[in-house]
Each structure stands twice: as C-alpha cells, then as structure tokens.
Image (cartoon, rainbow, N blue to C red):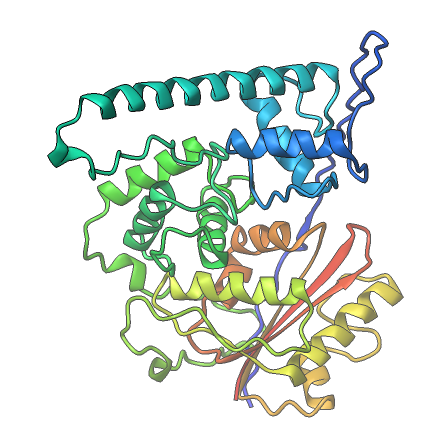
Length: 382
C-alpha cells in the first residue's frame, strides 16, 4: 500500500479588520429615522419611492422595514453621495422625495409629449406602440449574486473563455461567484466573489489576450514530490478524460455543512478549470476528517500526526478507509475563502488539490482553534 502525503508548512493566515463608524449628528426635527424592524405608513411611502426609482432588489411594499429595504436605501444613499447607513434619516428622506418628485415630473412631461405626438399622428400610425423609455435597472456598479443583465452575460463569456466552468445565462449564479473567487485567488485579490468594474476589466483583458483554443487550461499541474512516503504513487492517467473543461458539479451529500459544500465546490472549480475530473465526496472520509479536525481543536495541536490517532494513514486504516493512495491538507483560518486562498498559495497543498491521481475527497470545517476555524482535506484513490 502506498501512502502519498506532502509535508507542508503550517498555514496560519489571520487578518483583523476593525471598522468604527460613528452615527451622524443631525439637528433635532420631528422626523423619526426609519430603520430595520419599523413598520408604518412612512415606511410604505419610502418603499414606494425606492421602487419607482428602480432601487427595488427583493423589495416589497408592505410597510415593513426589513433587510432588503435597508439594502436598497444604502444603494440610493450611494447614488446621491450620502453616507451608506441603510437608515432613512431626515436628509435621506428629503433627497428621496426630491428624486421621486423629479422622476414623476419627468414622467408627466413624457405623457404630455406623447399625447401631443398622438394628436398629430396619421390614422395609419394610431396603433403603433411607443418604444419603452424605462431605463434598465441599475442596482449596483458591482456584480454579485442576484445581478442579471448584459454585463453579467459578458462577464460569464469572458470567464468561460478563460476556462472557468460557468453557464452563460446572464444571471449571476453560484457558479459565476465561484469562478470569480478562483480568479481572485489566482491574482492575490480579496476573495469576495463579487466583480467590480476593475475586476471585470481585468478579466475581460485576459480573455481578449487568450487564444480561443489554449492547451494550458487543460494541462494538469504536476504535483510536487511528496516527502511521505518516499515513493509516491504514480498519477493515474485513466482519470484524465482529455476533456478540457469537465464539469465541476458533483453530488453534494445532505450531510455536509454549508461551509464544507463551499470548499468542495472551490476545490472542484480549481480542478475543472485545468481539465481535471472533479473529486467525489465520500462521507466516510468526511467523518474521518471531522474527527481529525475536532481532535486538533480539543487537544490544541496543529500537525498531520495526531497524539490520539497517529498519522493520517493510520487514522484512515482505523476508520476503515481502504485506499491505494492518500494525502491530507490542514489549515486554521478565519473563513473558507481565506483557507482556500492559503492552500492555493502553497505549492504542496495546491499539488494535492490538483493531483489527478485522487478520485474522492472528504472535507471538514470545524469551529475552533486559534484562528477561528480548523480545516482538514483528505484526498483518496480507492
């Protein structure tokens, strides 16, 4: 039985971001600021004005100030260069009423002009429908989950040209977010999964410079030589189908947590973008990885060798995982995206993720450890 493990330097990535935002001071008036949880006629009035001004992402005119009301208020505040608090104070309310009044005035002018035109039309043109003057909804300069339109479709086409596994639909879905995160990871950018104008321009530039048929995207990364065992298992070429863009979609068992599912998707997006087959999730390996992660948290260590279970290979043997080749990645970090970026920034960890030998994976994300969360990835070939 061959064991395939790369010894890796500890990945301990921690960044702390503190933001203290003071509330603005306003002169005392009879207007009561509106915020999340409030109800009433004034809330309904604000909702109607937001909707009319096309700040209506998941907005309901129902007299209830909820998180979507606050989100749309922030977008309006940004558009008129106010502080983005999500709370409707007197200044925001006045700006909102003014913008709404201007829109109503413009609409009335359009109606008057339309009526004048109609009076001068010939009989043959009476049934001609006027072209819609309603502007395209412009919710944000940043594309994110829920965004849609031509800009999203263009972004998806560029990502697909670069070899990312996305569906060109014009809707910013989970696959688009993952592809954007992979791009951000490869270029040492913050992993937000959102695309602002600068990121869109960078992706577009790369897509234009890349030939339509490039062999690099489908060329598997050669894993670095592991230090344990001394003779690594030879990569199994049968796992490579020659498909330059295999699907990253695999069944995600219901037993996975949302964070574990996210990391599986990130790993398989990395593999798919390089022409490698996705790893199938094995819940027996997942359970073993969870035990290892919890053991590290409970016993306060960070190592491939557990004082309780021994090496990863001994642990797999103990838990009845009959593998032909195996490897393990471990990390402690604040989030899935940060841990994934750290893995992909380390040649040894990256080699395990992109090793064509492995067919199955078990990923555990456990709360605890000095950096917030503990991550264990176990890779297996049966």
